[in-house]
Length: 327
Image (cartoon, rainbow, N blue to C red; front, side, top):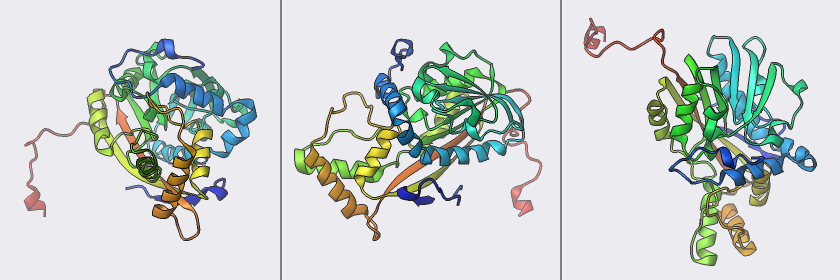
């Protein structure tokens, strides 16, 4: 688990613990409607407005760190990719880390035009193409069997139909193409979630959702398998960030474009409820140094599109030696 302080975020520690402009008209029909995708695009666009670009860059610390860890996993694959599709790329946290020795071209794909074009081409080592599109309707923009690798670094947690999105990712891959993803797990921001719920019960007599529901780590392997991926790898990591108070945490989430986008969310929260939540947060989780921690649980996943040339496990019962004899 990595832990660091908000006021020294540009110097992120490197220790490891491993184990639209409106796109509303292009969204594919889905039975799962949890998030307001149009509101999420507006939030992301707003975070990268010209007068907010500096704030946007200041909160890159979390995505930059996770992109770095995801890049390490990609480097374990001893293969050079002609093209890599960076799904939900934002300004290119992952794409900036790709070297020409491993990747010739990166296709950056995001629903937010402002975020997609926030940073100039000079900051990338590989050739860059930028596409504005919807992660929930990938096949409307990217042809089937066209990508050697698809990477998603912290974008899938805002997708309504995650099984459908994973299936579309598999479809755009060539046979034996690889998908690498990182997404927030269910324990992310549990401190903030708990504090807000307790404060609302105390002050208002009920609760409403303020933190996005997230995928449980136990479900990810099943979802990848249902989508048709093989040779699956899933592991979990945690990052703890220490903030001066709950207010700085919420400011950073807003600057990241990670504000609440749940359908039916409340338009505002009473100031006294937020003040109570801040006090509860500090009382329950505050450190001796006066800071409060925020936990981000990250699920990393790797899956391959089936191909006749892939290695396959032997059929059950085909072994010629008993494990008992070996031991």
